[in-house]
Image (cartoon, rainbow, N blue to C red):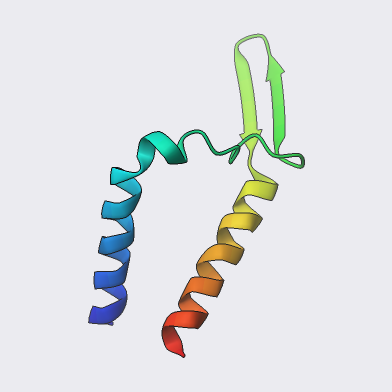
Length: 66
């Protein structure tokens, strides 16, 4: 458990340092993300972005366990 927490902390620090570059990625604007805009109402559900992030995190955890 401590190794996972340390790795998560390192990833968060790295994400913070590289945020200007990461904000240019099209996450949140991928095909398959649902966006409904009406007057006084906006609904956003990042289906494809969530699946992609989940896949990346799962692969990273799998490699950490090996």
